[in-house]
Image (cartoon, rainbow, N blue to C red; front, side, top):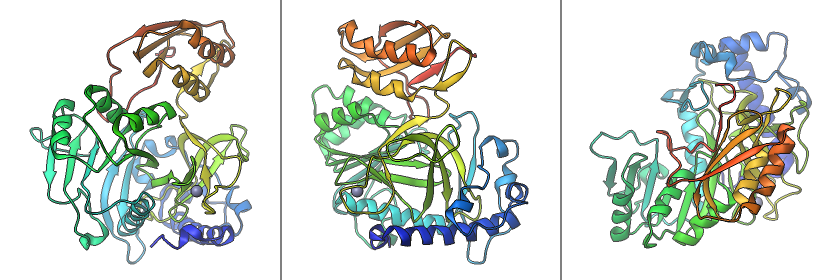
Length: 420
Ligand SMILES: [Zn+2]
């Protein structure tokens, strides 16, 4: 379905997005309470210029009342498929309705991913994630087919597995050592934990597809080296579904522009240019039940310097930097984005996993999993911390056995205890 559109020229993508946006805008302005207020003085945009002048939706704007974002009426042919909610790690839980249309587009995105990554339906596939709501006594579920629908079940697939984030790693290693596994879909923290526990290096996969959080370059290399797999990261959210996935011909990601309209906006409110970093403002073009229009999803991404060598016009993303709420307290009492720090920490050769805690504007604690290493390697980290906070910082370093993973399967790499 999206096989052709990935090669659309830029003007075709633009006009497709603008048309879809307009339809959604009109529907939302009429049938969704929050947009009735927000768009009272706005007409449907006829150009991107006008579109970019529309107000931005924040999570806080509807967090008090989930009905504000729900459509009171659905267009003919639209049916509710399911209800999902965000993990709430951002502090506010968001309830999202999916429909027959969002489901169709999700499937189309998944199929294109399978195509890009060369998945053979005869291989075995495991989903190892927080999303498996398992019965208490069955954190590992074995199936005769893949654990999700593949093109309407027309294709016969190999074996499948659902594994919950709470499953014991030893059991997972045991299972895949004896049965083998071709493809693994998981979260960076979970695969890192699995690799770490696999001391005899028994796990081998063809492909590891990661979802759900930032995948550091160093973590990616570690997974590739240990498991022999190619590692592909997909950027997605509960609110919008898939946003972008790794290109097979470069280090960039490409946005699923048939499904989402992606904007990257700098702190000063202007659009980010090539090479720059900004906040992700995203529109899910096909969700008429809970429309997310120009929605500030709370992430930073960096745009690439130029077009992708693969020749696709689909918007590129150089890097997903992580959450906007990861903010440092400065000496002057302001909060500034912390993302430039994380690359510095992952560059330290003897750190495999870490959690950084800010105690006050001067004191930081870096807990890490790895080896004992030269303290000099941390000079870059201290320098960035000092620049960001405008203070002479003290960095305490502690080697630990594990960095805890939350119930959602996500790792918390930064904790700010200054305002607690
Ligand atoms: Zn590409």
